[in-house]
Image 1 (cartoon, rainbow, N blue to C red):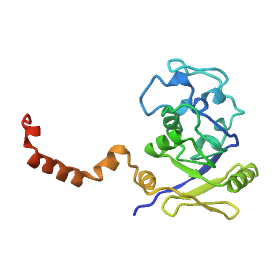
Image 2 (image 1 turned 90 degrees about the horizontal axis):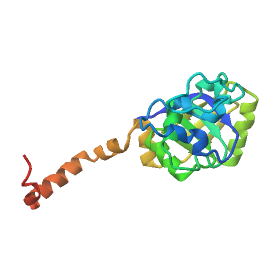
Image 3 (image 1 turned 60 degrees about the vertical axis):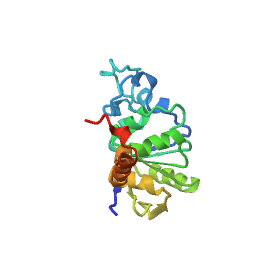
Image 4 (image 1 turned 90 degrees about the vertical axis):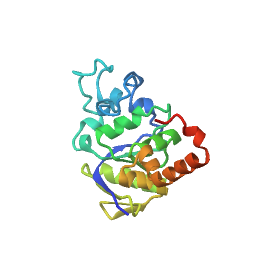
Length: 213
């Protein structure tokens, strides 16, 4: 089986119950393109004024917010507190996170719909216990440049100061993350079985296909 290693700078946001409206405000939900939403990630915190889909440029950055600081503005792994992604079911929240360049999120828990949207879009979610999360936040406070390495196949996390942890992930989600599968690709894995079934139906119920050209 292939593997995928996600390694990069950590972005720590030590806050619980971060909802999807905070991740991407409602005024940006008009577009259904999956790309281009990274600039709206945590929009109300990143900018000094409110923007709209048609008027978002030229706003002053809030330099106190972590995503506007080096090296976090190029981070790949977000570490947040409990119940990340709660609130509405907007898939735009996941699109914004992915478009920003974040490949994995570590927390103690995630909202169910946000979790499904994340894995379907190729973002790895890792649930760890409170002890590991608090250790992460404590170490990150003492080191601006903090790199984690996530081995998806082995389901392990390694970091500075001999930090090691393991995580659970089901087989289907693991395949999505390692191979980049979406729902269509998952279905096409059963292509041969689907074709055999169609041939069987055509043989047993040919009247269903009389209109085929």
